[in-house]
Amino acid sequence: MHLLLGAAAAAPSDADMLELGLSQAIAATGAGSAVLGTLRDRSTLDLAMVTEGGGRISRCGALRVGPRYPLTDAIARERPVWLSSAAEIAAAYPTAGGLWGRAFAAVPVMVRGVPMGAIGVIHDEGGHLFTAAQRTCLRAVADICALVMAYRQAVGVDRPMPPLGHRYAAHEAGR
Image 1 (cartoon, helix red, strand yellow):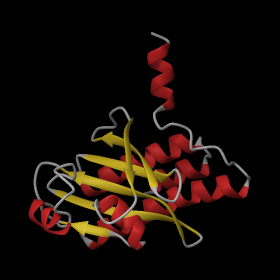
Image 2 (cartoon, one colour):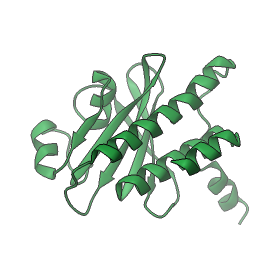
Image 3 (cartoon, one colour):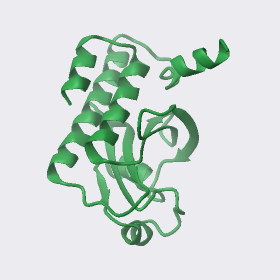
Image 4 (cartoon, helix red, strand yellow):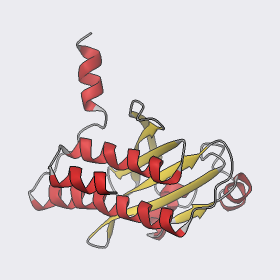
């Protein structure tokens, strides 16, 4: 968490800050991957994902906001979703499919009481009981993502968030 706060103080780009937030969410929970969903409009969530070890961040589609998926449900309910096993995921979201691993947590990203997106961590290898410390850390990461989004609103930035992984795309294009 100190690394994340230090990076925020150094004012990196928005995309770098959000990338770092996802990496810290993985490190704090031992997850295999993390996802950030940002609301494009009131009903569409754009997704980007990073895997353990700081792998390449990639766009991974979009979902409709609502109760069908745990990540979108966290936004619709405006509260975290904690699922510690594949059985819990299947029971709570029977039509969601197997995208959510064997344990999943989603925390809404709220700006002034309004959902702007959500972060999620995915455990693919097995179940995982999220500890109080891990829950606190994920909420803090979501709050820091919210600060980035609130800053963009305050300074009148109305274009979409820069693509996560932009520096990787630029590097690949130069090859």
